[in-house]
Figure 1 (spheres, rainbow, N blue to C red):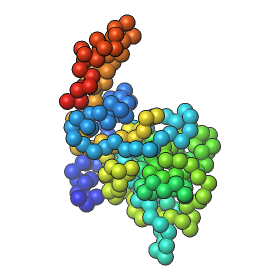
Figure 2: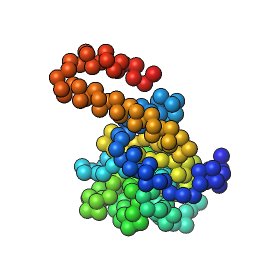
Figure 3: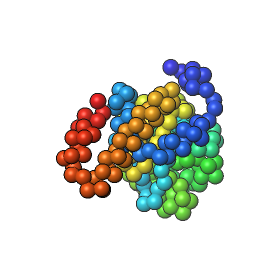
Length: 232
């Protein structure tokens, strides 16, 4: 499906604040379980907060596709175009194929994204300048940190195209949720369905925790809520 068709199907309106508020109450694990129940692929692996205190990220995806540097040059430094087109609350999603030997995001870009009021950045790869993220109070999730610059090593192939992110397909305007457990991607057209199922699972888990903290035995709670088969 082309980017133009994706945008036509999904519309140009920002994610409703109602959805953002509902997602903020959930964890990535609630959403991951809901995706499993619905047979949707959206649970990534290995992407974690880069610094202690990194805030939860919720927003629509602005994607960046990174490739190896070569004779074909990009007119801009990678990530600049994504910051330019991003709206308040968006999440920049960078596909660098999981590479850990070179940075594809740093302090200057983080400050630029912060000024655009971007919600945060998630990277299938590495970043650098972590102290700058802390100083700017800007959330960046990645596979790791490295000191090596992108210059001469990698370049941006495209902005706002379909990418692969940690084994998951991500399209512009798909929904990104990131917290300490990791990152999940929700297909935009399935958002309401996923939210309803995640909220249902969250409610059940909260009831279980309440009973456990009230002194009920784990075996009793397990049997009552059929914990092993909760996702059936």
